[in-house]
Image (cartoon, rainbow, N blue to C red; front, side, top):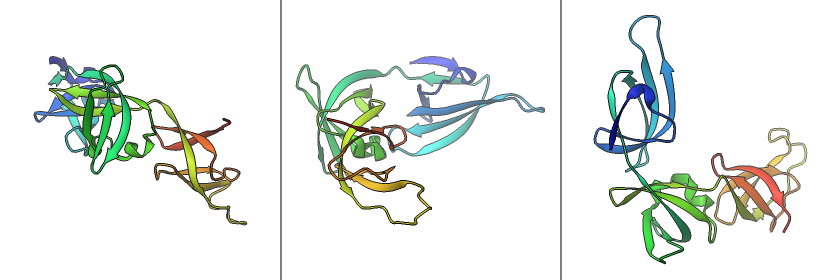
Length: 189
């Protein structure tokens, strides 16, 4: 671990806050007219997945975590856990579902991810920017429905619901953005 000033906290870094590892989602430097400047940090508790915001004074010292990244391959869901495998050593690792949150619905067979490890425990999972998924269920759009403006909900193979264009049908393969769970394009196989 290394110590940094709160003003140097960057999005995507891991810090120790109240003796627990946190992932920095967003930072904002605030310099009010009166008083001293501070950095507003939105972060995710890597143990339980909850999000919180905290204002650090610019001169506060913060522990930045030294984390290890491992490339792994998704194998299967096992109740409240997800099983990954190292493609080189075939070693398997089990990760609690809450570490991924809603992103667990974007795991498809043989997808490669990066596990973030701190003190022998997985505290984060980084998916590729986009993932290919098959449409398991697509209903016809309702005529005259202007609320959705050319989009309809489709259910992907994992159970993820994505708003997709009206021409998408069951069996199509879609490219889905893993950050927003939004439709990107249809893939022609």
